[in-house]
Length: 557
Image 1 (cartoon, rainbow, N blue to C red):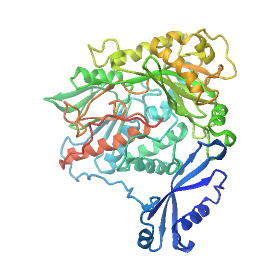
Image 2 (image 1 turned 60 degrees about the horizontal axis):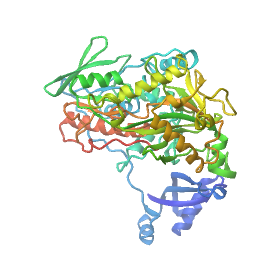
Image 3 (image 1 turned 90 degrees about the horizontal axis):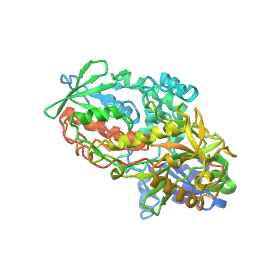
Image 4 (image 1 turned 180 degrees about the horizontal axis):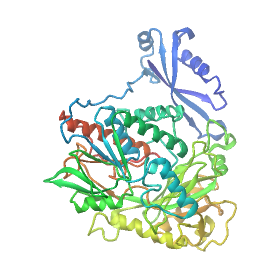
C-alpha cells in the first residue's frame, strides 16, 4: 500500500463522488492509468479555514496499485508519496492457559482508561476483574438526569462516577496531542467503530462521538470484555488497599469484602477524592500537580460559525465550528479555552453534596443552539493553601470553590452565572440578554467576582477582550459565563516508575487522568493500553515496558 498526502480540494467538492475525485487525483500524481489503481481508502480528511473565502479540504489516502515497487522507485524523493506505515496493533503477549494463583488482574474504574485496560487485558486472555463504584451506564444516565431535572445528586452515580466515566457525558472528542508512534490511537478508534461509533472517526481530523452514541458503545464494549472472560462488579467502591512490604496484596470493598490480587490497575478518574486520601494514608507516593479552574462561556453557535468559516458557515462537511484560544495575562497567569463543545450544552457535573461543578457536553449532531467552552486559568501547587502540609491540598482548593459556587447559586445545585458585559464592568447581572444558558437544573444571575481567586478573575477579565480580537463577537455583552469549572484535570499525580508501577508500591499501576497521566478520552484510552501491556508483561515475567514515568499529556481541546 502507498500513502499519498496533501491532496487539496475545494470545499465545494461533492462528497457523493469523492472516491472518484480522489482516484483521479491519485492517478494524476503518480502518472498511472486508472486501471492500475486497485483500491483506495481515505486515511485522513482535514480542512484549512485560514482563508475563510476559500476554505479547502486536505486528504491523505492509502492506495493499492499495480507494480508498487516501480511506482515507489519512480516517485523517490516526492515527500507526499510513501509506503503506508504499519498500523496494526501488536499485542505484547498472551496469557497461558494456567495462570498462577493470584495473577488475575484487578482494574479499578471503568472510564475510558479502565475500559481499555480491561479490553486489552481481556483480548490477551487475562480475564480481568473490573471494579466500578458507580452504576451501569443506563442506570447512571437516569441518576444524572435526576440532578439535571430534579436537583437530586447521587454521590456514587453522576457525571463523574459510573460506567463509562466522565467521558460518557462529554463532547466525545477523540483528537489528542499525545505523541503516538505506535499508533495506539488507531486501535482505540477501530474498537470504537466496532462498537458502533460512526466510521468517519477513522479519518476526520477532529473526530467526536457525542453522549448518546457513547452510551450504546460502552455497553457493547462491556459485552465484548465479558465474552472474553472479564468480570464486572458495579456499585463496588474500593475503600482500602492492602500493601505488605511495598507489594500490593489486594483490595477491600466498601462492604468489607477482600479481593486478593498482586496486579491492580488504578483508573479511578480525576474526581475520586476519597480514593486519593486512602492511598495517601496507605503510604502510596503522591505529588501535587497543576490544574486549571474557571467558568463555562456560552455564545450562539452561529456567531462562532461565522467567525471561523465566513460565507461557508453551515457547510455540512465543516459542521459546527470550534475554537482554541490562549492568552498570557499581565499577572503571569495563562488563560485558555478548554473542552470546547460546538453545538452543545453546559451540564452539572458535581460528584459531592454541597458543590457546583460545570462541564460541557454535546451529541453527535452538535446541533444545539449554543457553543460552550471552559475559559480557565492555570493554577500551580504553590497556590493551594496547605500545600506544605499535604500533597492533597489541591483537592481542598477545588472543593472550596465548588462550595462557593453552590452558595452563590442558591444551594440547590443551580449554578451562578453572569453576562460577559456585566462581568467586564464589575456589576451583578439581573437579566438575561439574547443568549439563553443551557445549564440544567438552572442558573442564578449574580456577581461572579467572588467565585474564583482574585488573580483568576483579573486574568479572565483581561483575556476576554483579547479573545475578541481573535474571534469577533467573543466578548459580546450577552454571552453567558457559568461557574465554576474545577475538574479540568487531577490536582495530583500518583507517580509511577518507568515500568508503570507506583514509585513505591509494586503491583499498583496508576493510570489515566486520576493518576495525572492523561487529560481526555483519547489520551486516557492510550494510557490505559500502555498500562494493560505493562500489567501483562509483569504477570508473564517477560520484561517491562518503558515510558511509564513520562508526564501525562492532555487531549487537544
